[in-house]
Length: 97
Length: 482
Image (cartoon, rainbow over all chains, first blue to last red; front, side, top):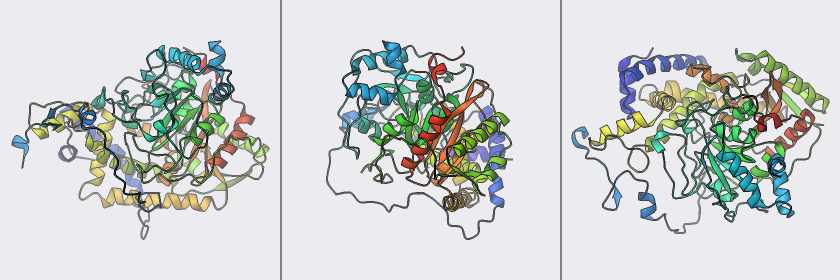
């Protein structure tokens, strides 16, 4: 069973603000899912190579030809805040460590 | 006239346009009117009246002949230039991308609308959409499946001639099964992922949802091809033509008995339908062979580590900086991130981000992610061994027929919907679901899977079986039972 402390730790890593009720429910639900998943840890997998990706293609190279990027205005159009022709963000402030 | 037009399959409509017997503007207007009156909540955006936008020249793919302009419904998570593309999430509400996904641009079909889905493609019932659930056209009190639930319901309900969906662990095949239509998950790497809002990058594939196998072959044939913008996407080795097979002579069909028996929740009526379909395949000349996929029953566990792990990384980009929702902008940067994400994502998306972050966290990485990757290897090896004995492997697409809205509340029980579809996703192999009949008035899906890049053979076999089954999807297009 995941502790509330572990849930809070993972939520902080994931940059998710959870309410108390969400965190409590998350502990129960994740524990139940992890209990099911735990079955695979009993399998004999010694010497098995991990699969990160099914594609066996090696990274292909394309011709190094410059092409225009999307216009700056088009990309900034969807931004919540634009500052000096770039994406605006709040000050890191007190959270900077 | 419009009723006659709406009864045409997409391939028949394309042929009629090519022959000069059907005006594409009239076809578009008929479907636009149907989609605008959407009784299923299948669409999140419908093209405005008038001539369709997006009736562009298809960009050069590998296909020789461009498609006649049969309108296309597109799952919300495909970027469509200037048109809302939100992956059914509040965190992307109103987002209009400045570019289109490769597959959308390559098809160059008139865009009918954007379809509802589970938020970020995470779900098996479409109940995780931030914009409300979708009704199944066969029974509006039931789910259409997910995550491509809007695409499946739109095609089954006669609101669209055909649709694009995406499949990460079953998200094309399971809704196709629940809605009584055809859904193809291609080989990983057959179709470009550029411009798809990513869920799990080593698993996501775009594919067609269509009324029949011929339509699926036609749409798929125009989707494939290498893309310099997706390094995992390669040239498709075959030309996909119109399927013509009417028998299964010489086809060896593998039945993975160990997998079929491993799930507790297999509905006896679905099992009976599966057995009858296998017998039908035998009568068409197929050789039925028992095969073993000893690790496939562990696919779901591996999948629910790998997919959330990849999702937790992919969804890090939604942070209130470049697009979409921002909350807490008056506070400091970290508070802005956590509030935007905490309130912008729905419960299932948060659950999977948490699960993935946990599985990748220091101290758990080897135990979870590393183990899951090894199981993935074993599952691929099982398929390779089985395809040494047989040409195709068949299973029910889902353990049950469509369930009631709100009927499955437990997340783990919901995940079990993907029991038969996830093994193929992990192995990266193609699989198709075709309707194989009704149980209590609801469609049942039959899944066929083949080795990587065997889509041409898969579509031929599915076509032969489809002809013999003779499934009638008209009741859903007529509105089903209210």
